Amino acid sequence: MEKDYDLFERTQDGSLAWRGSVHGLENARRKLAQLAGTTTNECSVVYLPTRQVVALANIAHTKRVVFQIAYDERLLAERANLLKSHGYEVVSVMDNERAKTVLGLPQRVDLFIVGHDAAEQTRREIVVWLKAKYPKVQIVALNSPDCRELPGADYNAVVNGPETWLPIVEAAAA
Image (cartoon, rainbow, N blue to C red; front, side, top):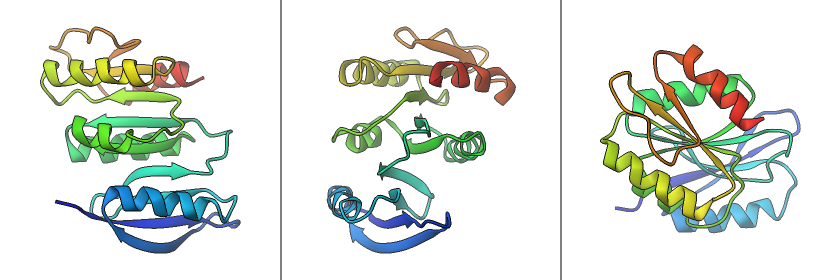
């Protein structure tokens, strides 16, 4: 089922200006490209019910872009807010299929984070896919304390709170 997405532009004063709504992710990406061509301001596509930023354009190159794949909406929102408060631009998606859809068209990503709240096989599959599509971008896998390290990830961090994984993200994104 196709969803409705909203387009926003960050104005010179830092506020977000709504620029329209479109039906379907591909239409949203096309409209984002059109909007980005008319301004040098940062532009984004947001799925408002979950506040997920699913695509970005005209990002200031001083901000590092973290793309997180999560399997729990609450954890996705908490991590996104924490990363934003530390100065990162964050694109968040729920599950592997949405990640593949959003990453279907090339975009700048500085670091991937793979959440811990899914089966190891599910997480392993997305790491393999990310490494094939973005071989130069590092991957941080968040692991529950009772889970093994995720093969293929550049970094593995035990999720016992942000103090355990945020320093790894900061080092990997540097």
